[in-house]
Every structure is written in structure tokens, then in C-alpha cells.
Amino acid sequence: MTKKAPPNPKLPPKNNTTLWQWLKFQLVACKLSLSKLAEHPWGFIITNCVIALGLSLPIILFLLLKNISPLQSSLTGTTQISVFTHTKATDQHIKTLGKLLEKNPNLKRIDYIGPKEALDEFKAFASFQLAIKSLAENPLPGVYVVEPKDHFIEQHQLTRLAKQLSQLNHVESVQLDLAWAERLMRFTTLSKRIFFSVSILLGLALTLIIYNSLRLLLNQSHDEIRIMAILGGTRHFIQRPYLYLGAFYGFTSALLSLLIIQLIYWLLKAPVDSFSRLYYSQMGLQNINLLEAGILIIISMLLSSLSAWLTTRHYLKKLQLC
Image (cartoon, rainbow, N blue to C red):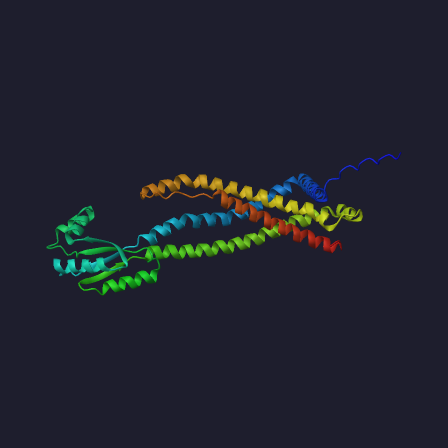
């Protein structure tokens, strides 16, 4: 009677084994990179501080743009045009002009300030009272203060509308004050270009800083890398700890830069709130939000990892291991 062979033990699926090995390699590489940081803590700290200061500058410019945008929207959204009537225009002429303005499809709000109302507003200022008393008659004309519809946000659109209004009967002049809004728009455009330029330059600087730091570390680990290559270590195995090291640089420097930004925010918040209250404004200082902070961390880690990959690839190529 033949004995049955014992059943073979079930082996784990090949896919699970491969995944476990991959995770194990990643864990080993992560531990190696942390051990290298522990060997040179001061170099790691100083490099992080330099990168964090570099990252803070574009974030400050970004927050400046972020805080200016609501102010720009409010200025462009409440643009007013003053339509001054002839001083000799009769009440009937003024009413006719008002009806024409009401029929204009490009206007959403029309307010009329009569000569007497305008004079009363000037009387409210003590500096004008003496001059007003010396006047024999009221020299102020009536004025229609009109507000264009929301789609009139560009300067050329508003200028064309003001020119059309100036051609109406019984209109002496039209005043469109866009100087402040135009300056703010130009400043915003300039700030955006500076932000993108500085971001690109500092991104390159971050890459070079990581490149130089890892190159020095690779030179110090020259013998270790040689031994690993002799024992059969692949290029990816040798390169992997330094990629994690670059990612650590990017992550920690991004966190440090966010801390710097938070300190600046705390320092400026109270003065900005006090300043806005002086002008009866509800504008508060906006801080960086979680999404923006996450994007900063991801970009910093990607740039640092890319720099680490370029550094190690170039170094291993010199050693003819790549």
C-alpha cells in the first residue's frame, strides 16, 4: 500500500510576494536615508533653512497677490461715471437726460445729485464754508452718477461708454476716474510676472542646492557605494536612499517655510486689521490655506527628488555604474 505524499504548503501568490519585496526595499532605502541624515544633522538643518528661506519669498508674493485680488475686484466692480449737466440746463432738460440714461442698456444704476444737494455736501466740510458764503449764487451743476453693468470691467469699454454719454444733449462733461484702479491692475500684472519669475529662479536654486548637498554626501560615501556595487547592488538599489533623502529635504524645508509664513502672518495680522478699520473696510489679511500648503509641499518634494535623481545618476555614471 503506497503512502500518499503530504500536501505541498500553499505558497503566497507571486504578486503579493513581489509587492512585499518592493515595500521591503523601500523601507530599507528609507532607513538608510534617515541614517545618513543622522550622520550629518547640522548640514541637513542648514540646508533646510536655506531652502525654506528661498521658498518663503514666492509664497509671500503669492499671498500679496491673493490679498490684492479682492480689492481689485471691488474697484472694478463699483466703477462710477459722473455725468455733469450744463449749468443753464432747465429742470425739463435734466429730466429728459435722466430718461435717456435710464433707457441706456449698459447702465445698471442711476443716481441724481442736484446743485443744492451738492452744495450742502460741500457745506459739511468746515474748510469750504467760508468760500461758499462768499458766493453770490450756486455755481455747481447737477450730476448723474451712473454705474455700468458688470461686464464693463476693461478700461477701453468704460472709456467708450463715457464718450457715448458725453455726446448726449445737455451734458457739459463726463468724469471717469480710473487712475487708481488702473494703477492697481498694472501693479497686479507686474506682481504676477515677478511671482512667476522668482518662482522659476528659486526652483532652479532649490535644485542646485540639493544637487550640491547630495554630491558632497555621495563623495563622502564613495567607498560604501563601490562596495555595494561589487556585492551586486543594482543602480536603482544604490540610488534609492538618495532619492528618499531628496524627498526628505523637500518635505522638511516646505514645512519650515510654512512656519516662517505663519510667523509673518501673525506679525502682520493685527496692524492690517487696525489699518482696514480706519477706512471702514472689512478686508482682512488672508493666509495660505491647506490646499495651497499641500501644493507647496508636493512641488518642493518633486523638485528635491528630481534634483536627487539627477545628482545620483550623474555620479553613478562617472563611476560607470549607470
